[in-house]
Image 1: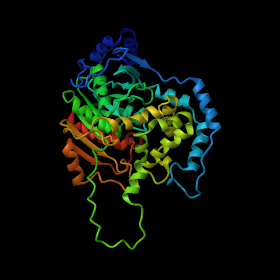
Image 2: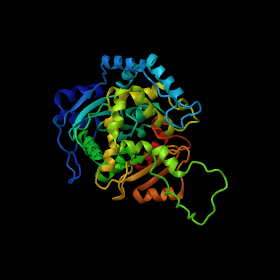
Image 3: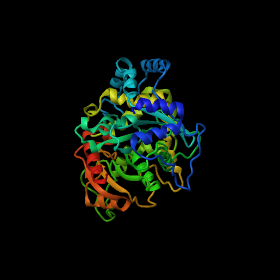
Image 4: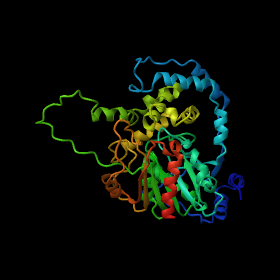
Length: 445
């Protein structure tokens, strides 16, 4: 039975029929949701129906966008500022010119709509997700989780190779059924109307989603916020999660600061110290974890402001030689920005930082979970050298100390660091990412 039959049946007969189709097509038994007893989810008004979805942005939204781009007012900049003070003016102007005059959202929308997409209500929020099934009935269900400021397009380049590996350098046994949800407040998912949608709560939503899709056993991969949420999914649902793969399991602990009280001051001119470097890379967290609504007004009203805020992160967190378009095209960068713009999700997505910082026991906005327990399921750590937001001071993810730190929190059975790549590895270095995913899951299937 093909995916169009599944979509029609799910729309007409509701979730019961949909799960029956999944059971027949996948050879897996449907199961009841199994969230932790101490954290029950609030039923949504739409029940548990799974509804086919297509991206259809109204023409009025695109017309308004072009008007705003044509009337953009830019900030001034020093001639030699580069990217040191934030988004470079020359690059931003070139991107806006392309966005206004050449970028074709309808072409991108059509391409994204080639994937099978659905919505379902979980914990009071309409959740959008891609559910792309392999033709291989023995394929492994794989939940793919991204972070901020990313979107479903982070995994766009690997959906085909995951679901149809034979056509992409792989073997039939490398097949996956792929599930890629948009987090609450992100992209085409709904926006929470109350406080408290923190990473731990989102993890329980994904446990519910995989149960609702009928997957008795599944694997999870995560990057950025998806890293910590994948970890929490494994902690909450170990009887159904067979393995997790993370875009890095962290780095070695920072070296202790030497006692310099009795030492003479250095004779050479000082460079940027570690505190300054951290502020350059993490200052955005302080804003989004304390006053996301203040920032959000600018991102909602100005497409140039939104692009400037997001593109600076993609520039600083990717592995390149000062030219962002060595790894991403303008179309790729703008399609990610567009998903935030057409859904007006700049503020609602930023709130995950606030919710993380203000949850019980939360000390800082971090994609890593609170150290309450160790993940027992088999874990693969596939790090990329520029993924931890420290382009001037890369953290060491490939050392004895780093592996020891990872093993304290995870049942590590696979530990690698790629030769290149940054914060959005499946989008930036899809071949390396796929090679590591396949190598790890061949050992745990």
